[in-house]
Image 1 (cartoon, helix red, strand yellow):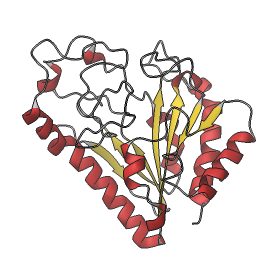
Image 2 (cartoon, helix red, strand yellow; image 1 turned 120 degrees about the horizontal axis):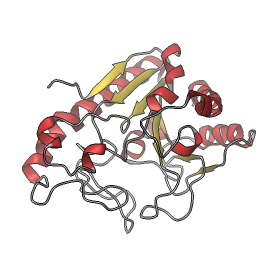
Image 3 (cartoon, rainbow, N blue to C red; image 1 turned 90 degrees about the horizontal axis):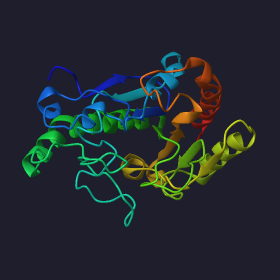
Length: 264
């Protein structure tokens, strides 16, 4: 494999930060079967590794995907069970964009064997590393904290009505993290007025949050879904705008510090 499925950095803090959708790499053997639109990997969580760049100076563990969600969606169950039954979803191996446009050329869609190959090649190594990181943190501190970091366009009619709040916090309706941690985050968000926010709104946390977040077992998981328009120009996803991102980075530093300081 020319490009490893993730980048890993180990810290000594109880916090682990995962970024499953920031990757843009598509192996050539997969890319050749995609449409021109599919090769543009439009549904990437653009530049959140840059947005969370301050983590490089923090003592936290990071697991950052390198491959596009077009290859395999690392925030979906390996059985491809729906996250939000009854709603449009793109699934474990997305066949369309968030706007419903086909990702694959006719007749080039991956079948069961290819799905299994991508699970073994990309999905399992990523989650193997993430699970090992959480186990190591828990062994050291007696508990673990997980932030699953995401971003998305502000308006996607096939996924939700209207415009999303700028910051969407998900704890699987309270199942993946302590209410006390959720309250800390809500208070920090409520203390500022630069960005709109919601807790357990349209996005309540994906498979990662729901699978690893087990407060009774000492693992507390939170998902952040940020609106891309709040830190970059959505019409130019290839361009990161540090000036526009500065205010969001300031808020994220506060929120990450609140999570890292939490003691169950």
